[in-house]
Amino acid sequence: MIVRKMEEKDIEDVSATCMASFFRSVADTLSEEGISTFSKIAASSAFLDRMKGDNLMLVYENNEKIDGVIELKEGRHVAMLFISPEHQKKGIGRKLLSSALKHAKVEIVTVSASLSSVSAYEKYGFECKGEAGESAGLAYQPMEIKLNNEHIRMFLPMKTVE
Image (tube, rainbow, N blue to C red; front, top):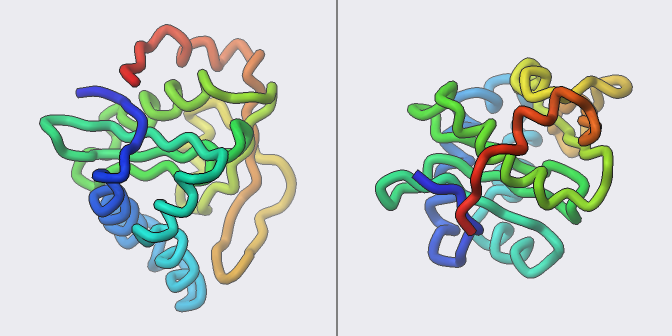
């Protein structure tokens, strides 16, 4: 079990992991527009395009299978955090977040959390900031975490293989 940087060979598995998790936990709370928007964002081609930018993408790999992914945009915003439905609530999200936050370029990292994931982000130490919103059919709650916060220290000791 390792956390490592995503490679091009992982893109199909990463896309499938995101879609499986999305349809299990989020899709039924959104309109068709939201589902369509997310499907475009999680498409293999979209991941490939974002890999060329200033986005850190990490995967959690277990027995050569991708069980989770996180995307940290420009070192300041968690753009994606998805765990395979069958592996949720086993600490994978925490390990991915821990690894990604070590690469943060700012003191406050943000996320536009799907409404169904707010409680999970709160457990990671994020706090709601502002009102929930909607963009292209995707409902979200703005949240942030202060990396100098005492709560974040529980993330730092974990080792990342890159």
